[in-house]
Image (cartoon, rainbow, N blue to C red; front, side, top):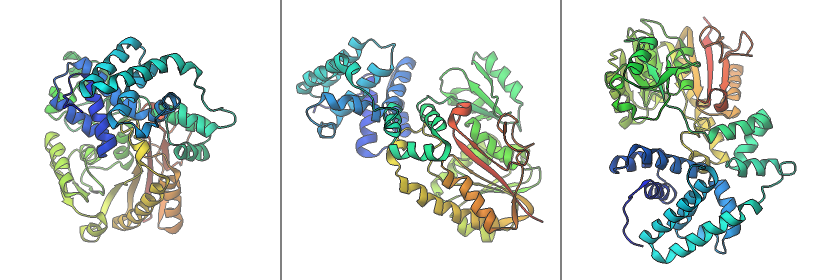
Length: 452
């Protein structure tokens, strides 16, 4: 194969897809790195991003359509040929604005640059796809519901089954559909330094189209794709990037000025800094993370937001708790399967296996048992995850409360927006947010109080 350089959006997307599949790279990191070293105009940046995330997110569907057209099994093709066919069929199926002849011509040109012998094969497969795609039927929705949803919305069957059994078919399918949507760019205002209305006005005055979040009183949604790090407001520490659902976690904990707060799994620092902002930077937020190299991430965001009440420590929270004393508030944003953030990390769908949930649930249970010991009487602990799996969420909290009569559920009402708690009982102390509800990340948030 000839040495190649990413000369356009499709070349770059193909290189990233190869890194993800053959080297186990994370799609978001590989794409960011590739774009940083490429000289693409903004429209091509957008196309490359769409091709990478879209192709990875729809692999099940793409392979289903390609398989009947091939004499050689997909997994026996050269890696770059397999992925070029996938990203080309993705365009032919999902990107109406790109003419089919342009997609095929570009795929053939990419083939010629990489291996001229393969160009005829790629051309033939893609033209055959255009002729026969209407004849390729999906599995019956009536007889093979899980298989059909798995193929149509491109998720592993075990994941579809998990959500069907937990929440019913309507919600399960809605989760799958939402996971294939592109995520929005959301900013969290640094409320310690500026109000949301003031920041909105500043953004609009500088020509940035944005509007207020209806999910979080601290959130701003950008109406266009852009490099947030180039915004003056970002550089000046008036805001940071955070998903709307994630913003609710610090609100649920509701720390106050002068309190001593523990953030147990703190990196990269979004929730840590939000806690400090809500405390008006008065008191102490102890941020602990097991990965030493990630402490620098927390420090960087705290410095940019000009927050001084945060102290950081690297180490396993299970070793730190005994030495750290007692806290008024504890946030355990637990490590989890991440099934609520698939729209941001589509490769998660294909690397997770059912056993991962049990394995991570065992760790969560251990962390919850140990960190709860550091809470003062009448103190509040918030347990949160960015997943949609009952075993890691509601079942985890109910089991903890059954084993610890010294704790009780503490109502979320008054701490979270009415919209988020709509339909919940007045004394509800946990909430499961699905990705389809607000077009934000899937999250679980539970508020517990240690009885005095």
